[in-house]
Image 1 (cartoon, rainbow, N blue to C red):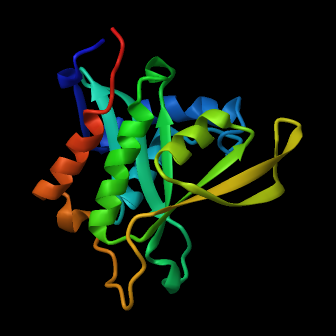
Image 2: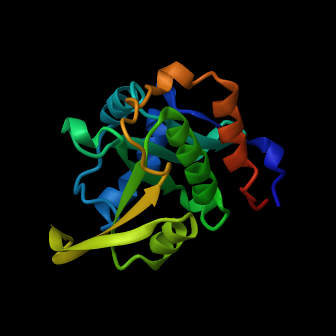
Length: 204
């Protein structure tokens, strides 16, 4: 097993756009995991990192300065009453499959989202995908519904299931979630990054 000390969890930066694009592109071009049918450019990925990172955490896992996976939160809906809900996304390089990297990244992501003050996290999964369903349910997600035949890609119509994770018990008059930049350098966030990192066991 690769020593976990060589693995680092940190926030995504502009220079990560190329490797993130390389990880994500196959899911667009030859898979129904993503409903994008054309892979975004490196420039577009850079723009997404910058936009999402204004409000939400986008974190990467890297070994020897090589990014092997990433996870981020994003706005669930533009309407004001949805502001305490967030969508969650994780992608892992084939080089790190079945290492626990996805679980580790998600663990850190959800702890940080909770620190920001988000209450619910949602994940959409193109079905069937037992590996993704297993990952989400192992982390506490509960199924809440299925959009039947909602997307057409690679010659077929596809269902998308939705799962929900509670980050906090519901409360009256919750304060607005904090932007990630407000807490990014806090000790609590650093501890959240470490909590996910130590779950990963990469092979040699």
